[in-house]
Amino acid sequence: MKSLFISRPMPADVEAEARKHFDVTMRDSNAPMSQAEMVQALEGYDAILPTLGDQFSAEVFAQTTPRAVMLANFGVGYNHIDVAAAQAKGLIVSNTPGAVTDATADTAMTLMLMSARRAGEAERLVRSGQWEGWHPTQMLGMHLTGKKVGIVGMGRIGQAIARRCHFGFGMTVAYFTRSPKDLEFDATPYDDLHALAAAVDVLVLAVPGGAETRNLIDAAVLGAMQPHAHLVNISRGDVVDEDALIAALQNGTIGGAGLDVYAREPQVPAALVALDNVVLLPHLGTAALDVRTDMGLMALRNLKAVLIDGKDAPNAV
Image (cartoon, rainbow, N blue to C red; front, side, top):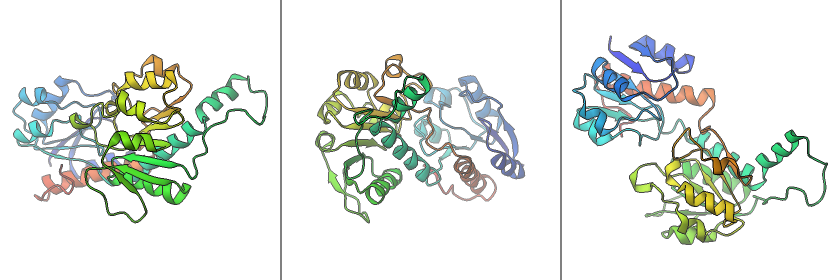
């Protein structure tokens, strides 16, 4: 039986399925793996099931001649794995697309509504005991229905967000792309990110992480947004220049923001925490039991295909 190292505790159904097919070692810690742990896992097991925060960098791979032949990432994003360095050492890398799409799109809608309607700020008011009752001008936010949404990254998740906005909220959809998509609803492509930012009421980020998108949303993009507009990020934290975002929120350059991801998770800048016009979630994008179970089972299907059936990984990256 092939040996499998799982880097974090998994849902019960995922663990049970893994143990049916592999000799499993599963860490009992939710902290990211250390470099020493990663080297030991690469040398001591046939495969590894890592996840966000487990930084399999070129430096890690340089320290080892791996026994492992595969990294089956738990999650669609894999910018924490240096894929080129892994492949140079003979490892296959896979991820879990599809399983996360709807849950992440739902989280984007949650953030859009919470930010536009000031829901986080309003809940804090109620909990503080200082709410004085309803009146006509209290906690006025932005009505989302019928507004214009701009989506940066029109892949699976971006399209799922767009469908919810178009069909559920009657919003006009625009998106930033190098090549226009063939969509089942009206959506206007933009090839200029600054022009898109200037045109929309809500700008939603759904791009992959990595060097190409790091600080994609900088002071210039934020400065192009309308003063009432909101920024929503469910992609990766470092897609946004956090210092520039803090300044834009403090100065009223934009109306608000909803964030599920941060540049240096789990660290969140104190200046962000202090602001009322930003909603802060703890990376809840796929945090539903059935979704996390589906993600784990998809990772295992990739592992079984390669290690047991001798086939290609269905979701190799």
